[in-house]
Length: 295
Image 1 (cartoon, rainbow, N blue to C red):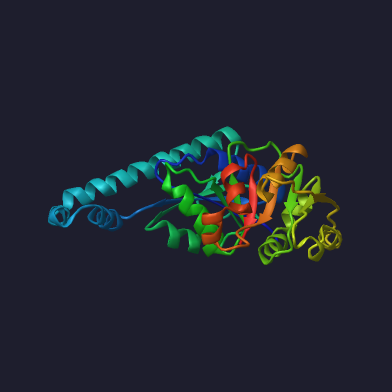
Image 2: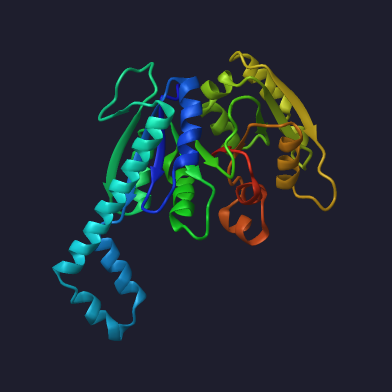
C-alpha cells in the first residue's frame, strides 16, 4: 500500500507545527502530499453545546440568542481559520513547501488547506478514509480536540494513525521498532504500513515474553517482512516483575534509539484498559517518540 496522502487534522487554538514537521519528513521520503483539514464546529453545534451546559432556568435565554450571537460565533470561526491558514502559509514558506489549491504531481510533496464545519468525529472519519495516514497529537486534557482526534482516527477511520508526542526526530524512519504480539490489530498495522517500513533504514521487531509468546514469534514476522525486502532484527523482550509491558516496550525503544514505535492499538477493550491499564494506554500517555498505530 502506497502512502501518498497524509492528513493533518487541526482546529481552532491547535498548533499543528510538530505534526506538519512529521508529515514533511515522511512526505519527502514517501513522495506524499500533506492535506491540512481545519475542523471547526458550526454555530448550531456551539449553540446546542451551550444549551446543554445550562440549567432549565437558563435554557430560555440561550434559545433566545439573536442573530448577532450567531454572527459573532461565525466571525470567531472565520478568524480562527484565517489564523490557522496564515500559520500554515508561514510554515510552508520556512520549509519550502508549495501550498496549492488542488492536488499536483504525484511525485512531489506539497500541502493543501481545507476548511470543514461540524463535529470532529464525523468530519475526521470521512476525511480520514480518503487518506493513507492520519497524523494526530498525543492527547492533551487541556485541548479536547486532541483526544477526540486520536480516538476517531483509531476507531472510526480504518487507516494507520501516527501519534506525535513531545519531539519529532529528524528522520522518523531511521529506526522503526515494531512491538509485535501477533494480534489482529498489529497484523493490520503491518499490512497497511509495508511501504513505510520498506523506507526505514533499520527495523527491529520487539516481542515481549508474555503468555502468548510461543504462539506469536517475532521470527515469523521477520520472515514475512523479508519477502517484502525488509530486513528486520528479532528481539525477545523479558518483562520483569513490577514493570508493565508498555513500560518495557518504551524502555527498549529508548535504549535502541528508536525514531518511531509501531504497534497495534487496544488489543483488549478500551473499558478494560481504562479500568486496569494496558499497553496502549501506557504508550499513549508516556511515549516521547512518534507512535504508529492501528486498531
